[in-house]
Image 1 (cartoon, rainbow, N blue to C red):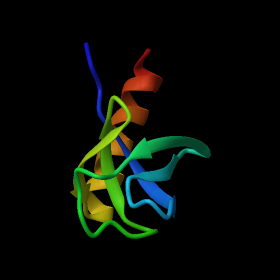
Image 2 (image 1 turned 180 degrees about the vertical axis):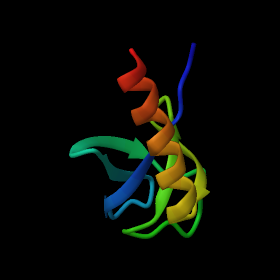
Image 3 (image 1 turned 45 degrees about the vertical axis):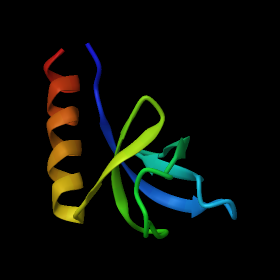
Amino acid sequence: MCLAVPLKIVSLEGDGKHAVGEAAGLTQNLRVDFLPHIAVGDYVMVHAGFAIEKLTPEQAAENLACIEEAIHAL
């Protein structure tokens, strides 16, 4: 099973294709070239290292809360 995770963009590389995203204190390098006009502070849904959708802060918080709930259910 694959899982996409919401991350907040904390930095962008000069090439416009790479960024660093963060959630729960963990960071991940990712590709953002599928989504034009991404900026530091934006939230994106990340799957297999690629940002596949831009999220509102509310959508990201709701997704992260669901993931947190599933972790604590285990």
